[in-house]
Image (tube, rainbow, N blue to C red; front, side, top):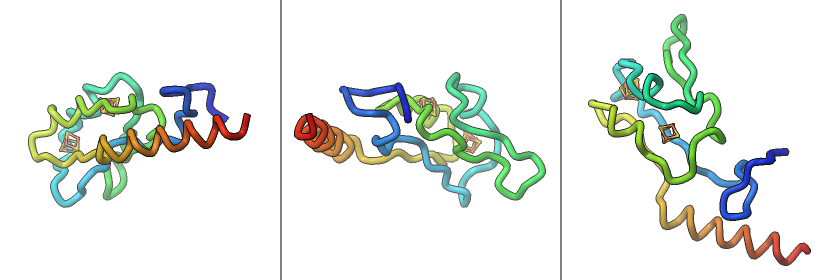
Length: 97
Ligand code: SF4
Ligand code: SF4
């Protein structure tokens, strides 16, 4: 259960978060330093030293951390498709009332 909603849709139904391309990431941690929402988690002892731990903490349609990423290792879902899906979910939820 999430109390957070976006456009009336529960946040956990919306697929919006960064994906880390591990072939590019150099673990500079600039994205984690920048983001105030605890989306990322550092795993210093593991091969993948940074993971997307809390995707639902990511602000829907924010991409700000990607601007801090020199190697362009962060990508996001397609905005138009995400908007379309949010509208579909809104209709589904309205139909259930
Ligand atoms: S897109 Fe925004 S909210 Fe999401 S992880 Fe990056 S800086 Fe944080
Ligand atoms: S800013 Fe880019 S290169 Fe640096 S840790 Fe984040 S994803 Fe990796």
